Image (cartoon, rainbow, N blue to C red; front, side, top):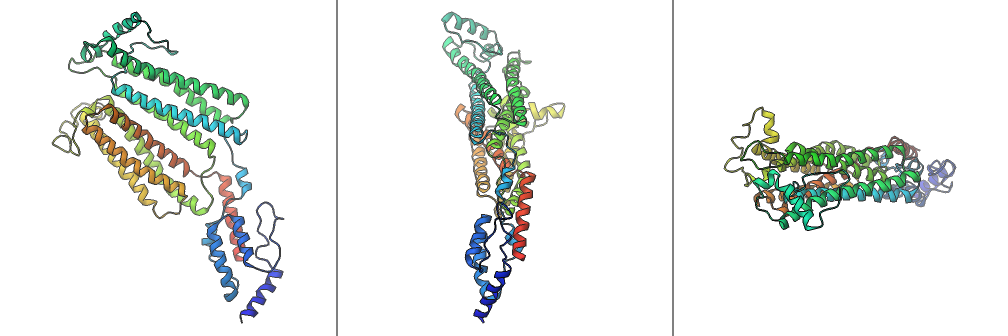
Amino acid sequence: MFRSKLTCLLRRNKTINPFSNVGTSSSTSRVSNEPFRLSHILLFSSKTSCTSFTRNAAFYGFRSLHKGFSFPSSRRMCTAASISPSAKEGVKFLVTAGPHAQKMVGIWLFGSAAWVFSMVILGGVTRLTRSGLSMTDWKFTGGLPPISDEEWLVEFEKYKQSPEYKRVNKGMNVEDFKFIYWMEYAHRMWGRGLGIMFALPFSYFVRKGYMTVQLGVRLSALFALGAGQGLIGWWMVKSGLEEPTSEYVQPRVSPYRLAAHLTSAFGIYCGLLWTALSVVMPEPPSDTVAWVRGAAKIRRLAIPVSFVVGITAISGAFVAGNDAGHAFNTFPKMGDTWIPEDILSMEPIMRNFFENTATVQFDHRVLATATLLSIGGLWWATRKLDIHPAIRSLVGSTVGMAALQVTLGISTLLSYVPVSLGTAHQAGALTLLTLMILLSHTVRKPSPILLKSLSSSVARTANAIRS
């Protein structure tokens, strides 16, 4: 019986080869019309680049010798179809001058994003050391710092006229003033250095014709936003040089302007990071239908979670602008209560969410908890999904970073906001946002040409299975 079935199968294969229509580059690339053997199945699986197909096809190839020619269900097999190389050649790149140019532009953009990251950290240190109001004037192009003792005394006399010196630092000597001056000067010049570091390579790449119009317009908008960031920074500092409305209030910058300055910096950073990722990774991982479907499910969750992370970071700017970290230095309660009594004491009510110290800190606590729970829910929802290993790793890293960020926030509050922990907490917020950007970019929807190619590959695999 076994011999007769094997003979019939070999005779059938001589006339109708189930793999005769399978090819990778053209319709003329076919498997030779030889007797059906296990090597044909292994050859077919190597063409589709799918290890799961190899294991299943080998098993069913052996089983067909006993039970006739059969394959597993087409639904299971089609999810393992891969995208043909010809489709990947049709992907639209932001850099069209070849792999070397793509690498150069990518390194430049990632370097620019890292520079902005360092700017945010340096800005946090400047704020925490109360150095931001040490320079009482501003020039767009900047200038040389004081060098001689006479020049330092001139700058110190300007600072003595500011409300911060009169109410906070009265009696400060020149040496102490030099420290806060250098901090603010370094922050300003670091930003101007970023402008030069961005503009020169950008001009070179445009001149060489490396970039598409789309990429050029996007980077021009980011450069304009970066130039405006200096104006926003001075607009913020200027608010701290004005006399406070009450003699019991310490001079500080407007929380609204501080939030605008920080949000603008975060926006520039996210734009640079997303663009850099798009340059080096024009398409998300989409080798199989199962991965595309899993990424789509994660995308529906990652976008709202990213929004929560961003809102939480912005609320932290209002905590800093109102010095809310120096109040209610207990956890989990705020003092002796869970909700302070004066949480809605200001009129109109909306002012409380931006100017009331108790409300601002309460909001930040609630949003931080919501961020941790939403990221934990994202991880829980993706445990059993068939997704790319890089996506799974990103989700796990995001959960760990969210837990670390909450720990840093609590430690900073209980320690009365030391410079080291406060800076680490601000860096943690941007790191968490970075991971969410990476995740959202990795699970974005593939281009129509890749989806069409994947569908065609699925159809070809299904036809081969049915034949």
